[in-house]
Amino acid sequence: MDPIPPRVTAAAVWTGSGVDVGPVPIPALGTGEVLVRVRLATVCGSDLHTVTGRRPAACPSILGHEAVGDIVATGPDTDAQVGQRIIWSVTVACGTCQRCRSGLSAKCLSVRKVGHEAFDGDWPLSGSYAEHVVLPRGTTLVAVPDTLPDAVAAPAACATATVMATLEAAGELTGKRVLIGGAGMLGLTAVAACAEAGADVQVVDLDADRLASASQFGGRVSDGGLVDVAIDYTGSAQAVADALGRLDIGGTLVLAGSVTPGPPLAVDPETVVRQWLTLTGVHNYEPRHLHRAVDFLDRTRERYPWSALVTPPVRLDHIASALRPPPAGKLRTAICP
Image (tube, rainbow, N blue to C red):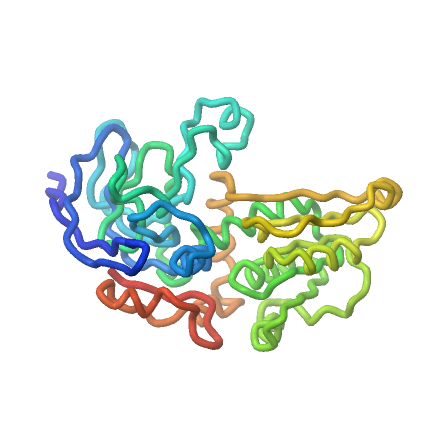
């Protein structure tokens, strides 16, 4: 007999001026829905941008889209298994629109996003800064192997999966000279993934401490020379321009950090043509990238110090202290609801 799911949970509701932690009712589960007890959540930089006013977001809302948890209940018509430890996708796609059918479910015409929905809408328990989250039909669920700690698995739902998407866009990496822009969570993950793929990986970052940590993940400080592939996670127009200027013949530039409006980038079409350059962008990711993220983290769990990048978890009622940049030497703050 399946356990009876709880009727009330605790959640941190972002109000625009702060966070209110309190009881929230759990709705009856609809077709294809899954109720997850959050084990651990990590604070993505985009949520810090929300609470500091740099990124527009639904308000009030329950933020949080990097997490790991256990399935505690399911609605009708779902194959999910109660008791399974999982991570889940940021995007929730319809699966039927033209974009979904063409393989771009990340840009579904009716896409909804975990941790981005209005608390007073039809999906109040959408974020992981809560004891429970409701995952609708269309959310990708990926089982987490027992060998992978919660603190390592949680960032896979955003940072690691996004990196997998950017590497796919970059193409073959074996033997290539690769430049990674930014040594934050995405950047260091990309350094490790490119190094594992057999690339010579260089890194640029304005933060000297972050730059120094690149060597622990298979990279080195940039030498300023030409590269075959550049991947930018900074979103800085200057960093993007510098990366574009370093591409060798046949080079590829992948942009993933430019998610807010910025100054236009000067691109000389003749240079693109004569040097056979490729410029592309990646936003969100597809289900296959989330599966690859978990596989990659599990495969490299003993090779790279993933756990060292995450702080010890704070309790949900102390979440205000977590919604600020992590301390030196850390790239993610953890919350344990």
